[in-house]
Length: 238
Image 1 (tube, rainbow, N blue to C red):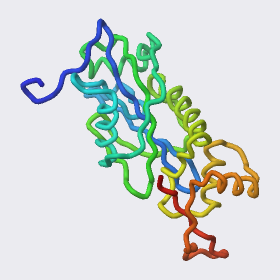
Image 2 (image 1 turned 180 degrees about the vertical axis):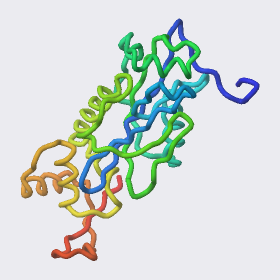
Image 3 (image 1 turned 135 degrees about the horizontal axis):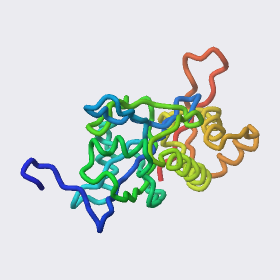
Image 4 (image 1 turned 90 degrees about the horizontal axis):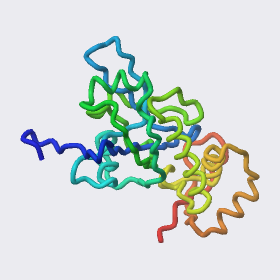
């Protein structure tokens, strides 16, 4: 720890290590990803960009601890779904002109190579509102299929995270992390369709998802809907 209580950053033979987090949320209509606005430098002529939340790893901090710290600053939540999915090590990933102008205002060695480890997280949108952290000017949700040009290689990072989400959705049925505690089969199917970016046959989907034995049917139905109330389900605990 330094005299001001701030842990120094890892410096490994001319290379920094960072963690970038792709946070997914679902609002029943869109799959969203959490973006931040880069902190505005004192020199307001330097253009800031949008990015996924990330930070350099502190000394004596594991990768998992760094990812959890970043998410806690943005969400104030602990114990949310968080998984490492890929490492990004292109030597020039932070050396583009648009990125260097911003980095020179915040980093002692802005041209140092930065290897980043990607994590993705799944959160229930109803449980929190994102807030700006000490490394961001603002934080907000964007449709994952309508993401603007981002800083560094963050568009690639989001794309890789989406591919991993699709894989694990089918292999491990992790979509429940994005839904309310109680949901209908129609809501679940819509989530799958949006993540996979394709339409699914209603009958086959219901037959296949019930066959996985991951759902518990409830003796409850929707309330406050204009159409015929549908049966509610919840995730079956292991």
